[in-house]
Length: 337
Image 1 (cartoon, helix red, strand yellow):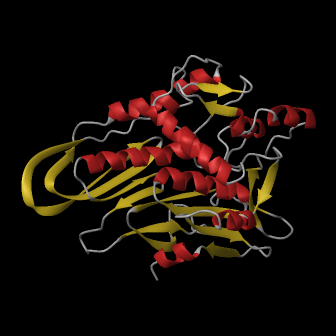
Image 2 (cartoon, rainbow, N blue to C red; image 1 turned 180 degrees about the vertical axis):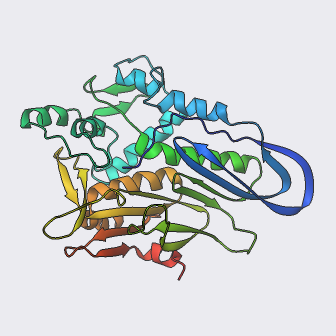
Image 3 (cartoon, rainbow, N blue to C red; image 1 turned 60 degrees about the vertical axis):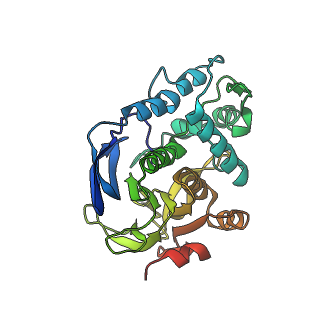
């Protein structure tokens, strides 16, 4: 999956300068969290990104980056039971627990031990795990083996259980940036970070909802092509998928990717190429998109029946190798024809 660690710092600070009665568009682009970002907003204030939100990003990184040895999550993973987690960790933990329960455990922040053992990576054959190794690792998987105490400490059934929130933390980061914009009285904006999106208000240039795109999995590298255009307003959208890294069955021609079944611990074939999710915030959209890739089409459809405010657009490969699309009713209403 394309999830990215909260290692690099994202600089973004708003300074309110001169007041103006004219609302104008402002756009900023750059690199952050190992990927690219774009922030566009409308304001009657002259705002500029001159100082940074490094303090905010430092706070998130020191809480949840598995790449920082002194972060709270790294200390917890090493078995330190004295760590009191902050509000960032608490928010992501609680959202993860919610999605874990709603998806019957197919969103699981403890599955990283299996990801590492199989050696997931682009163009790499998966490692074969012996049954004894698989059984041992499976005992360390399950978010129900972890709990957050009333005094904000993490308790694990086994000290070797490894936590990794990378599959949801980028979405959370976007939400924090959005809330920061809103705290500076920005009501109309679009944030994009590594393909994840959060929109509020309108694109005032044409007095319409923001329009974003879903990439075509058959596009050639370096030549971006959209599969669909989506209207997005007061919502977030996240996409999870390996559709640029799929493999092709030499006999049937069907495209597939490998995904881990957290229930069995096995790396299974999946014909899902990508899952795009619209939800109220980007953290939830990020988590559900990851879960749906692991669930597969039929189980995703079953889970959707129990969820409110969650819409999905799934691209998958049929048995004859053709790309097919499933979209929920609510998502279809947002497609720009």
